Image 1 (cartoon, rainbow, N blue to C red):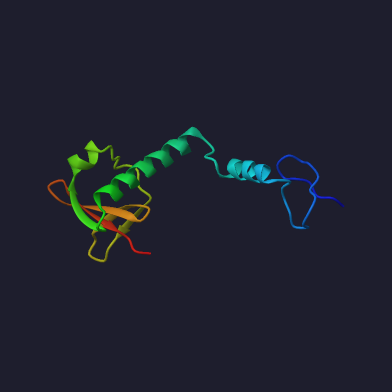
Image 2 (cartoon, one colour):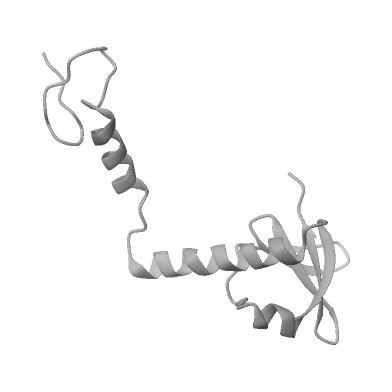
Length: 116
């Protein structure tokens, strides 16, 4: 009973638990598995990445303040975030992965980083 490569179907020679005939087939198979399925997913993921980069750039000390106009000027899109956290005091933070922001007053935002 011989095994075949999951990507190209060629016969596999070597270890019993081997799934691919070479590194190229392994990489091609994994890239297909991990790619964004649609343009919509790709566009949303790109916007999330951009928002994350902006928050990281403006928040190097893990806690800082900025304005709505500064965020917008850098291309931040407020409708794209990954989670919402509400404190016991009913304060709402919006997070893009581990970078968060909260409106505090007069279009000023506090930027925070969630510790793991």
